[in-house]
Structure formats: C-alpha cells, structure tokens
Length: 232
Image (cartoon, rainbow, N blue to C red; front, side, top):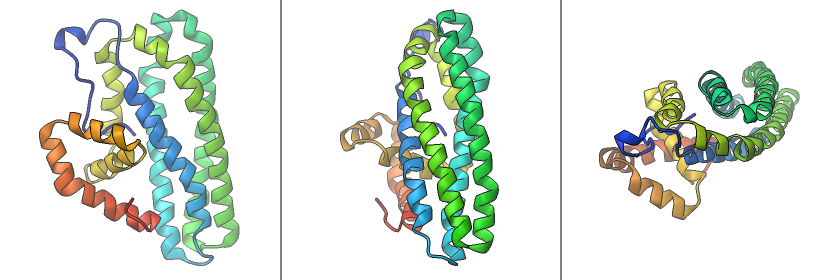
C-alpha cells in the first residue's frame, strides 16, 4: 500500500541526486501498524455463525494482507539491491529485512486460507484461528517496521535519489484498484495525528484534495462504517 495521490514534491533538477525524503514510508508504516493492530479485535468481535459479518471483516483482512504483500514486494524488487550497492555498510541490516519479509510472507500466506474458511463457515474455531494468525503477523510486523525505520531509512535517505525512492510509491499505487484509492487514502489519514492530517491534506494537489473532500471521504466513511461499525 502506498499513498494514492501524493508524491514527493522537489525541484526537477534535484530528482536524480543522492538524498531523498523518506517520510512517506513512515506514514505507510503508521497505516500498517493501525490496521493490523485493529484486525485481531475486529475478527474476535464477530458473533459465532455470523457469516455475513465474517465476509465483511474477512474481506477487509484479505485486502490488508494483499496490501502488505505488495508493499514488501516493492521493497524486495526496488530497494534492497540498489541500497546494497550504494551503502554496503547497510548489508547486514538489509539481510535482516529480507529474512523478516520471508517470515512475514509465510505468516500472511497462512492467514488467507484460514480467513476464507472462516468466511464460509463462521465457526468459532476458525474465527479464533484467523485472530491468532493475525496476532502473529502483528508481532512480527511491529518488530520489522521499527527496525526498518531505525536501520534502513537513514541510509536510504542519504544514498538514493528522489526519483529512485519515488518508484516505491509508483509501484504501490499501481496495484491499488481505482475504486479503492480513496478508501485507502482515508485509512492513511485516519492513522495520522490530527495536525499531521490537516497539513497532509493542505499539501495535496488541489484537484485531488477537492475530489477527496467531495467524494473520497464519503467513500471511506461508508467503508469504515461497514467494517468497524463507525465512520471514524
């Protein structure tokens, strides 16, 4: 998952020199912390046998899983090799990142069939299985995101150009269905402190900001109400 509407705004002549702004990664990490942190409780809140509710929450879980897979695939294909070449001293940290990605990929792949089985049957046993697997994903994810922010982002900010860094966001946006762009933007905004949220909206391109306020925020509110039972 990556920001659907906003990229780094730097002078064109600066796009290809070493040095980039990596704050968008911290923002996306905040989104994953929030969504995966909420997910086990959402699953456990579904009444036994309520397959309609299991379908709604399960689809939300599956979308989260796909988004995290896509985010990690972008780093695996666009970040690690390039950063290894530019910052060899970061090699040990990159090896840890790759190992953590592999471990989380295996955990996420276990979530998918368990979730689909729960959606089909709505049993307490399967609901518990989904929640426990999400607990495992969340624990691994929190460790990974903290390590990436501490050990990787400073090196990436110094070694990579803004154009190279922006490829990660382009990769993430390319995988989001058009009908989900504003919903995912809404979740990003919801995960931010109020002051940061207002500043973020103010920096969006005016057409995108207007479209979000007229259409997108209502799409997000309706989706969140359906999944969480509340619009905010």
